[in-house]
Length: 340
Ligand code: AQP
Image 1 (cartoon, rainbow, N blue to C red):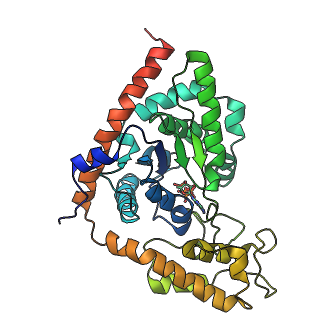
Image 2 (tube, rainbow, N blue to C red):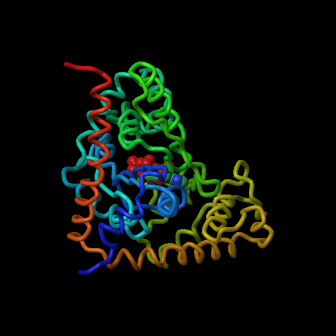
Image 3 (cartoon, helix red, strand yellow):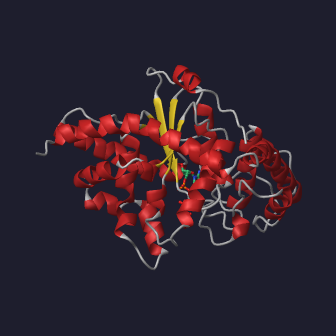
């Protein structure tokens, strides 16, 4: 299959050293959902216009909870297709798999050596995930140090993420600053870029929780691969509340506010203003579903054109480009730490 992603020369021409660098990652742990897209991935795609984008499928992070052998392999390929179809251009940006660049785990160790046990224990994602798991791996606990390494290995300026990752990016800044104060001016201190709208899309069945790949009910998450009928059904069954007033009030009316937020982000509107158009939940659900179907249609069309081999080739290209940046940064760190 012949898909055109431009030439290498094109990519070099657009990726100039003067652009700020954006880095972010996603776990290949299931089909990308609407929360991932509106909270992070749409921003990744847009930032390609103004930044040098480095986007990573963080397969090693996915191993921090028990998985069947082979599960992550397939999911990584599918997640790569998701990212390409939402608009990440593997020629213009760097799209790669974390485990293909060994420097991530080496830098993660250096980060563990400057991170405090107490600060890791305060991470809300660890608290949430460890409470709901039977087996809590050491990797789940040190997860933010590997995430810090992912970011810092690319001299990253901007980290486009959803609101749930705010604390991890703050932690990255803290430990990078600590590392620099011990070893010299080695690491670039990054900033998060969290969208004003869509930063926390909630589960349609449990609107008090964020939409998540590991959600209990499949009806709570809208997947990028869902059919029109599935999307309509999920919105129709979305949990609202007992009274029937349509108002944007995330604290007191989380379900309705989530529907308004989704409709607003999908149509570039404002949730409070949109609420004035509705007196009942039914039409709001119908309109939110229709807007999401329109939003996802071009992504789904593009995804159907991608095959496995093309995707693997593009990821290999990405790994080469990622190593070009990561290897010298890791050398800088080794030199600063001064081992024999
Ligand atoms: N609900 C959300 N709203 C807005 N942004 C979100 N993100 C995740 N959920 C929402 C952003 O998506 C990027 C990738 O995050 P991830 O790989 O951690 O995906 P996940 O869906 O959040 O997965 P879980 O639930 O944490 O873990 P698993 O895979 O175990 O189910 C990030 O930028 C995140 O902010």
